[in-house]
Image (cartoon, rainbow, N blue to C red; front, side):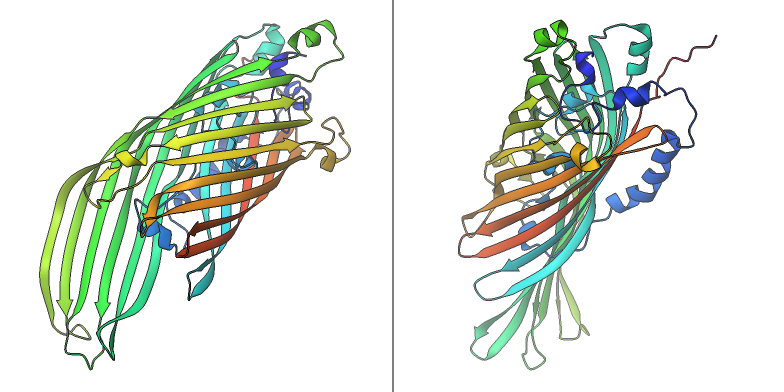
Length: 469
């Protein structure tokens, strides 16, 4: 067996030749049409954030969304050194160089969070489309099988759209300047930013080099209100700030793959499961972006019958910088049986700047450990034996602080990747749970459970060279 046909932890490595051998046969499932239909149905959802009340999103550009796909989130997020023949991994674009079939991937998540301070607490559900991606190899492995060539070179390409950050909160509290005369302070925010990407990766020998190029854009709105009662002779006050942002995005990655038992596989045809070490590194340069803002401050009587505009300005031009990021990872894979990996990344948030909403942020680190176990990949009669069972742990810091206290998140992830097949096509259904806690010591706690859902459709007849007798 060619070593590239069984490398890494795909749920379908061992079954792929069964489907590739029949790739010229007609089926009613056309990947091109499937992608277009699902894309049109879901892309509008990707550009609308799920309803959520997160006080943490008041700071910076909001709660940040990861680029990690669902099957890797279920292993704690060990994405830097992970390559796969059929799953997409835009977190390290170099992984696209190892693709052996076209993959259309989308992810959904639902979250139940319970937020509490020393006095109050609330619980809520939220959900959103996490990403929508398409990846394909420009050198189809079917051509390699029929030509009996050993391709050292491969070129993978992909496209993706996903939320980048989310701002959504509604907070209020009673306050007073004079005893017995309370007033209501409220803080509201909504909007976020989004990301569209074009990815390319070139693999030669044991190395793959890749890049994401794209655009970040979005709109964010903030408001602060002071509301008095009718008995108080005072004006209500409303301050609003809204701004749009846009900027060029880039990210670069490198992955090395070393097969530890390659000599044994060549000498003994019965050994067809590689034991491998993969090491990866990714770097995201600082992102410069531009902003256009609108700011207003209005006083009004109770009920809004008389208003007085204290300040109003539009078309305020500004600039900003999102930080650079560096990540490392190593993964060991034992055939089709199991894999374990570790991931470390640091983000230099002390370089963050935003003229539209100035704020000081801190550098962060994230550490993740995880892996999968598959009972018996060769058992074609029992899907549970072919299923990948996943487990992971992670710790991450947040760049934002509340009253000079840092925000930290701990989490445990579990999941399962179920391989599916129909009409000589194959897919993976990835289901998982993320149990975690995000907290600011003695100030604010969020305990959450995330339900993660990912689906990857695979197609193997793109870019096939047709031959006729």
